Amino acid sequence: MKLLMENWRRYLVEEQRCTNATVLAIAEHFGDEVDPSVCQARGTSLMDVFDALKEAGYKVINDTTYRMEHPKGRIDKPIPLQDYINDHPTGAYVVATRNHAMALIDGKLIDTAQMTNLKRARFQQAARVEKP
Image (cartoon, rainbow, N blue to C red; front, side):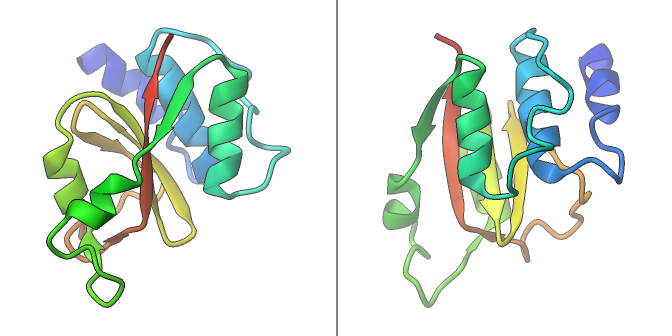
């Protein structure tokens, strides 16, 4: 686990786009190598992350039911990012807050912004990533 965290640290440099760091962290989790600039020429939307992961051969399963099934899942009640993290202790996920993408791998958030208040950050969307 220590070696894995050391590898992830190289993706978390400030100049790294969150979309690029997310794809690289997920590829590292699965033991794959991808072009280090995989998302640099793309936009910064979550769909760009999904597209890059699909092109790399991963299966991306959008988690649309989480928001509907969560007790705070109404539009007027934001869901804390910490809730999603707690509810997904295993697996690889792409998680989005407003204008930001992150990787959630086995319950650990891999993030270029180094969010410190996960109860305040608002969950927007997520997708499970699997290697076929």
